Amino acid sequence: METLTSIPINITESALYQLRRIQQEQEIPSDHGLRVGIKGGGCSGFSYVLGFDTQKDNDQVYELGGLKILMEKAHSLYLAGMEIEWIEGLNNRGFSFINPNAKSTCGCGSSFSA
Image (tube, rainbow, N blue to C red; front, side, top):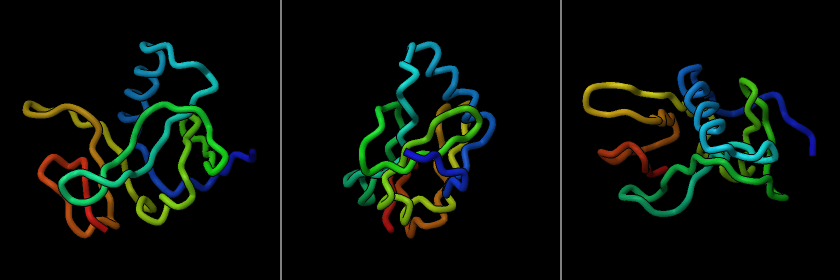
């Protein structure tokens, strides 16, 4: 499958660093890519999917900062323009999703409605 260069999302340098660290620490096999997507559920209707997985037939494949990114084509409608960043503060630490397509989000920041 062809690797596409125009990725519809952005992942900040700090998030890429943390993702590469997780990949190395958890000894994720090299044939796995970072799956970015959505699933039904969560307090606002959809939840974000972010984790390492093997490539599926309906995936679009991208490369960003040395990571293979996997995304179902249908999900790009909801995720186009989204930014994933790493937040490290006093009260929270983890990945944050900034999605311009979200009509509303929940308090935890991990689910949204479109």
